[in-house]
Length: 378
Image (cartoon, rainbow, N blue to C red; front, side, top):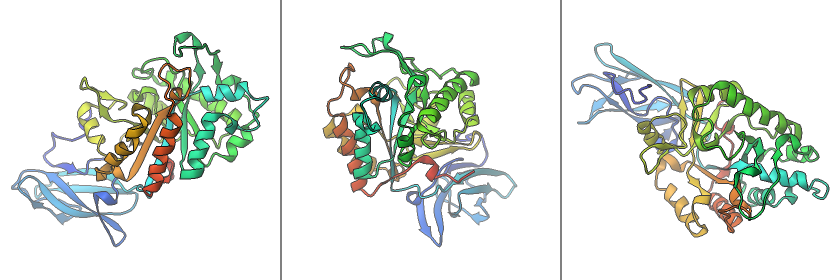
């Protein structure tokens, strides 16, 4: 198993770690660079330098302020005996004062648009998409909807009325031009084959997840255009996936993924892909982290909106502001099923919750973004 903290090394970076994405809240900006207080653990009698700048022992570790400039910076710590440790850190492009609203488990809004294709004159006649357009028009929200290939009505997912089977190949392409026209703020991405399977990719092989993603990509391009399809990043269903699964997605164009990077009550990681508990606890307190071995950027979701009543949304967002390492970028998300009245856990205030969260972001100076906006083009 990878040692993300490199505890076994004679010289070890305590902060930042390999792959850390640094922003102005991690240091001091001056002369076009970000000066970061680097902390290195080594024998206290050593003479340590980082990028040829001498470090001082503070009683617990060595410290030195090092300038970080450009998108990617190598940090090299050395002692007088030639022992060294190397890491890579990132300075993303305008990574602060930004926010994004994503939604998981999406497919029912597409079924509704298809069912009403002869009466709807716009995709925004669908009340679910109309709500997101209001969030964009009023508060500058960028919306990413992570979608399923199919909906299976045989599962008892809904309580009071049955829904017919639907998959993306059944979706009309009547509104393709309108999807494309709004693709600067509304995008669709892969989530999973269907919503009911628990952690479908926790043990996946490359072939299975690739097939599921390619099926979704093909149909989104057909009915909404390449411009609307987001291959670049997503949240995998349940946020659990094997290394091979993430490599398969990377082969299809994935460059980033979002998760909770949190610990469940039973002590195990939740929505944290394949990363171990101790490292998930570290990632929970970062906006972004780059897996330098897999070349995938991970972002932390700050708030799952459907987990709280309307009156708690603003206090929860205010809580995010208390941590400078998660304050730069605010990631909020929700799940589509809670919007629908026939869902067993329907939230009547769904729309008010979404608009309240987006208003808070706008009022606090955040602008809508997509993950590719902060990454160097490659």
